[in-house]
Image (cartoon, rainbow, N blue to C red; front, side, top):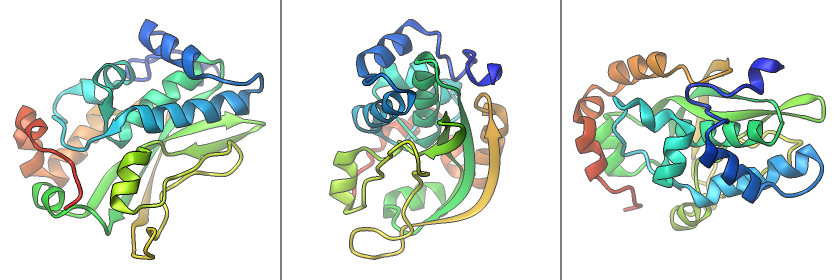
Length: 214
């Protein structure tokens, strides 16, 4: 378990800002209670935004996501894992390919696909077992999209719902990409270059877009 408690390059749980955020938002005496409170802090205090420069490794780094107060699924998962490690709880990150049936037209056009490769989530070791936690979509965004916000109790896996609040198809999980002690950034960047060449080539210009429902 030591590798899941150590600070990493991207899950940089020893960063002062991460430690401070973890302490400020960690509530309860039991590990599960602390993990649940940190889940909601990362989910709702850090805005979800997929329009980022994926050639910049900082978008995958916990402390950078915290500083920017925004991130996409991988960055937010790294931040949750870092905060949980800072609270003394083993954590790692996991990935899966998912098809998003409710992506915005602008995002689908920019990506050239509704397939999200390397969708990221945190995997937390609580009460003797690994539990998945997906803090990607903040509550305000879920409300605007009429997507059911993901809840987390520290006992059951929290992954995207297959249907939204209006029972439309939402997330379809297609491929498991495994679990890691730190974010495999080069591997993910290579997959993004292949899957989303137009989006990846935007570089810093990707951040000029705004993620909002149509």
